[in-house]
Every structure is written in structure tokens, then in C-alpha cells.
Amino acid sequence: MRERQSIARERSLEPDRFTWHLTVSPADIDELDHVSNVVYLQWALEAARRHSDARGWDPAAYRRAGATWVVRRHEIDYLRAARVGDAVRVTTWVESWKRVSCVRRTELVHPGDGGVLVRVATTWAFVAFEGGRPTGVPAALVASF
Image (cartoon, rainbow, N blue to C red; front, top):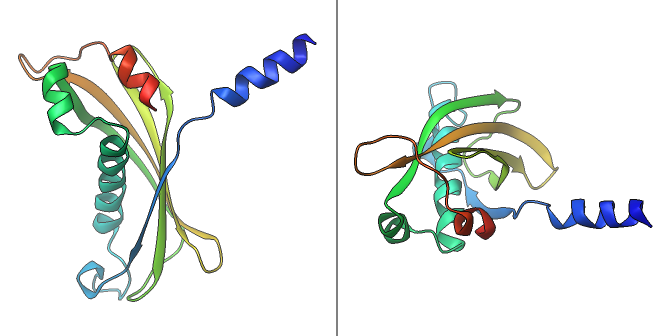
């Protein structure tokens, strides 16, 4: 019985995943005729913003909380190229929380064949607007994700 309760508890802690879809445009392409590495990073950041907005944490909510997220670190694995006209599925979730930070994962996939294009792990710090110092992540924010 204890084992079942533990499994149920772990399942309930599955992070909220957010997905959006895009199509590669000519502006996304670099001199090698595929999506620029910088564009993949921009998409990962855009996914984080969209996810936050969808969970009720838009810029106004962060202003009310007195703090917002800033990037501390990106780890990016570029696995496959995407080209003009390709569809891309971008999925993001918060993998782990600490007192003043979190790690967000983002995966960019070619939905046609399911091939992973890019994986991103971003460490975010929660920083007060006043003073610019790390501050505790509100429990209500964590609960939203």
C-alpha cells in the first residue's frame, strides 16, 4: 500500500508542460541554410515566457510580486537541423525548484518524425526588481507550474 501511495504522489508532481508550434521562416536561417543556433535559444526563451503567461504569471504579475526571472545559465544540445518551412513543436517545463531559482527544460522537436532538434536546460534566478538581488520564489508561483 505504501508503494502505491508513493507512486501516486510522484505522478502528481509531474511538471506542467507547455507546448506551442511554429514554422521555420527565412529570417530564422543562418549561412549554413538551417535554423541559427541563436534562433533556437530565442524560441526556448519565448516558450518560457508563453508558459509563464499561460499560468497567470505575466509581466504585471511579476511586478506585483516585486521580482522576476533572469537567466543564470543555458545548456544547449543541438542534435538536428531544421530548415525553412519545417514545423517545430516546442515543449517546456520547470524540472526543479530551489529557494531562489529553478531549472527549466525545453525540447524542440520535428513533429513529422518526432526527431529531437534541440534540448535546452536553463537555470533561472528569481531576482527582486529593487536591488537586483536573488529573492525567494513565492509558493504561489511554484504551485502554478
